[in-house]
Amino acid sequence: MSAQWEAQKALYDQLSADSTFMTLIGSRLYDEPPTNSAYPYVVVGDAIEIPDDTILYRGYDTSVTFKIYTKPAGLGSYTSKQILEEMNRILNVKKFSMDSLTMVICKFENALTDRDGDIRTMSVRYQVISDENTKITF
Image (tube, rainbow, N blue to C red; front, side, top):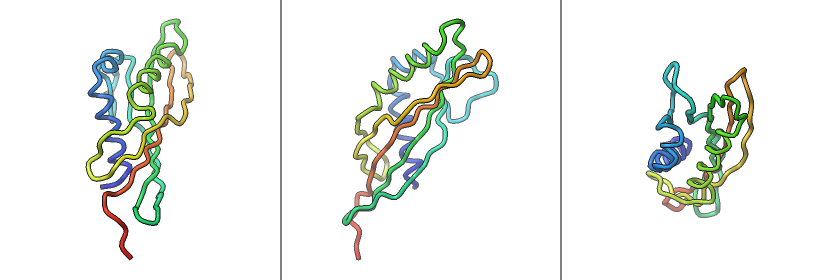
């Protein structure tokens, strides 16, 4: 299994298990959003995986991007920033289980807001540093 998939799954599992977060977004956390979804909603987006091996372990530095979509009705990007705050409460500077890798840490990298008409988007990126559970043999 790839580090990208494991990181994405671990972050998704943490977010979907948090009732405060899920209430805030109306339980609309998607890998692929349905057509005409209500707002707000959050989508698991692209991921970048970079090898991060040490002398003893095979490691991975994975960045996972989420997209927050809101239709603010005069609130500007307040709603997306509220959602970001909750995501950071759940994910930033945390460590949680992965299927076949060991997570070293998950941390917030950056967020970028944008607008398309009356729809606001925010791209949020988290870095997941992980390693394999077995030592490298030569």
